[in-house]
Image (cartoon, rainbow, N blue to C red):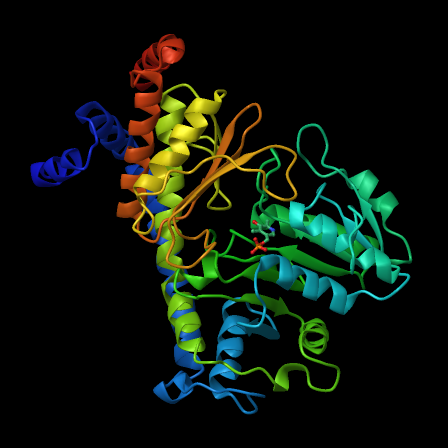
Amino acid sequence: MSDRNRDEILSMGIDGDVYDFCMATEQELCGRFRAIDEVTEYNQLKVLNAMRKNRLGESHFAPTTGYGYNDTGREITEKIYADVFHTEDALVRPQITCGTHALALALMANLRPGDELLSPVGKPYDTLEEVIGIRPSAGSLREYGVTYAQVDLLEDESFDYAGIADAIHERTRLVTIQRSKGYASRHTLSVQETGDLIAFIKKQKADVICMVDNCYGEFVDRIEPSDVGADLVVGSLIKNPGGGLAPVGGYIAGKKEYVEQASYRLTSPGLGKEVGPSLGIYPQILQGFFLAPQTVNGALKAAILAAGIYEKLGFRVIPGMHDPRNDIIQAVEFEDPELLKAFCRGIQAAAPVDSFVRPEPWDMPGYDCPVIMAAGAFVSGSSIELSADGPIRPPYTAYFQGGLTYYHAKFGMMMSLQKVKEAKGSLYLESRKESIEQNRDDQTVTSQ
Ligand SMILES: *Cc1c(COP(=O)(O)O)cnc(C)c1O
């Protein structure tokens, strides 16, 4: 990078040693970044081709209101999503408010009283607990007589195939598989692993519906869960596939029959997909989808850079800087509440919106301890934009994701490291110094 960039960044309150450390780390990651670019190029073409094949035109951008009958913008958006995910059909709606809503919709639409829902990958995302009724909750599946079974991963995080085979019986109707680790400490499943699990489940019971919670996983790989046997894939438009531009929305892509069921639950039996006004939002949903591969590219590189920076400083990071990556989330265990807060405050200070706000931990509903969050986003709650959060409890883990551009996310990393340095009093954390030097020696040995 030219001296002019360095001068500019130092003038924004970053110390020279922080800047140099981040730049050296970035340099080490060049090879990985190139591999990500190749996947992005493929996914960009996949989205572009779906738009060209469906003859997306300017006329599709006209807004509709009220019932939204014959909304060609809505119809073509759903065809484009179906083509990208290689599914028979898709439901892509601004009326689906978030990822939890999309998942609840897919579940409630495809389960009937007496059916059982199975999670073969352990406890699902926190908000799903109330949808399912794991925590008693008004309107949950449990209130409608849908039971729930769960099989945890084994100690080594592999699938408990014997346990899963035992758990599947005649009432098992739908299997929900969450790709991303969420707030759990397991690894995020790759698409291929997800496919292996689906194949096993279908062998036990061919007519069971396999649904994948695809949140944070879209466009990370060349293939999506629907390419490896998933009957339904579900996600949020204020994460990866919205590309940062979609102001709201969720999607459900999959087999026609199951998507149709979801449409009857979203609107009404008899109406289904035929109603739903665009309210002028589909141009943003479409443009966001077009940009999404590139946005995910930047978010992935930023996550790897964060892993590199904190791994080299001796912190435990999940995944590690050289580990395979199947979503855009990076966890860093700070083991010190002050460092976790400093990290989040750095992310906030680097934001384009609300950079002047100083995040404080607060008692968020649904959590058993205070949580600190950093988000300075154009779209409220958007986590494809640079954001971080962490529950204030050991091991004081920061979960970090997003970045509309890599350059912004990289600056966010520098600012967070600056704040961590200020909180600790030095860049090379005293307690870590030995392990860093040890690491460096090891690397010198292996590179010789
Ligand atoms: C974010 C997320 C959800 C829920 O999405 P919201 O938009 O926050 O409701 C569900 N599952 C996973 C794995 C997620 O990351």
